[in-house]
Image 1: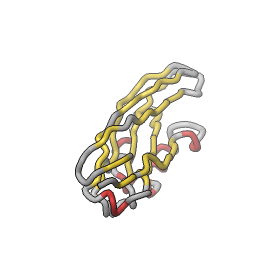
Image 2 (image 1 turned 180 degrees about the vertical axis):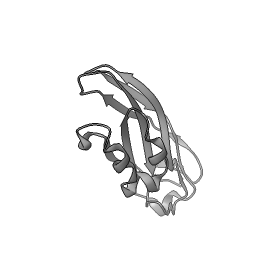
Image 3 (image 1 turned 120 degrees about the vertical axis):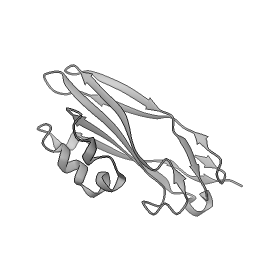
Image 4 (image 1 turned 60 degrees about the horizontal axis):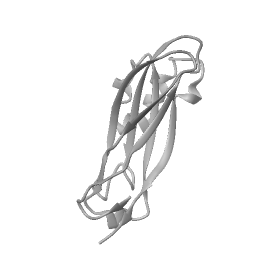
Length: 139
């Protein structure tokens, strides 16, 4: 992401949600945006927070693709040049745990994972973390 101070850029984020079970399920989908440099957000970057992308009913073995196009920006991109946002996509079977997954602190402290643990038999497929996009400061 090539950023000038305070000037937003666009970049699509795609989340694929799948139901690997044997019955239809309502699945809440959340996307956490941890800004470059972490929770202190020294670059004054956004997005910074958790976005609720909605609740979807998926039949067994169905997949859905959700896209969002946030406005990426930093007040001081030079201070986080080369660093990346950490994105964490969260699938909440039954769509009932957003209250435990609504903040970055909850998502990255384990509180959200603990809330999701009772939703299904496989805890390892409830979330996925990626480091992107990377900040490239331009003048």
